Length: 299
Image 1 (spheres, rainbow, N blue to C red):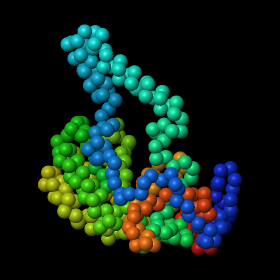
Image 2: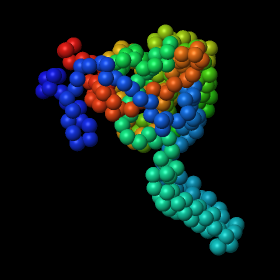
Image 3: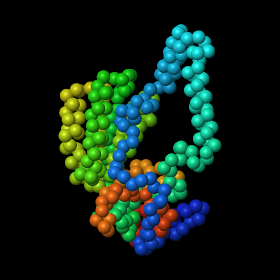
Image 4: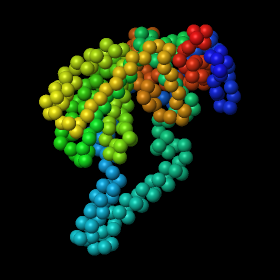
């Protein structure tokens, strides 16, 4: 299939792609949560402990606790904590399930098709073509190659430095041109202790400035000095030019690039942080190449 024959899928209908850029009349989705400065809702420490242990380890902890209760309490009192926790789990699950679309798990979910398009920092308006602004994607992570996982030597100090770096880049987001960040965990190992932060920067100069931040420098100096062979680090940086990226989110909460915030100045000269989530049922945003802002005549 040649580029000119490309069609985008919209529901069950096929719609031919057009090269007209003036149909890019983007609408912000009203369901987008309050626009705000980039922030991290889950701390790296909480993120590192969650799911860092095997299921059998949690079962062992639970069994040990239950044995301890049986040794000091009568039978009926000893089983009370487990019975109450089980009842609480069943009741709360049934209540949330009965709520249907209004249940807690649907909080901040944007129904329908949405895409992330960066607005102009100077005006707060979206460009007449999609993917009009370049962006830098930065992956920064750590892993613990040790049987004790997050309890291994040096892990606490590592996470302290990791947290300090994240706090610094969030606090100085405007200075670094940092648009947003999201935590992720790798699942290629049973230990699930490879942690990663995905950052979005306006340009590589801002990323480089963050790399030379005092907190980042101190963290790296400590890593070199400590010399823990079981603690590994990595980073990847991708400088993505305009018209070289696209995104689509269906019935999803703001995530990754969709969870970024761009500091913009409106027509009245007031500064606001704007999230880039827009309606993907508009004009060229209906197709992949359309969301990339690529006219087929370029190929």
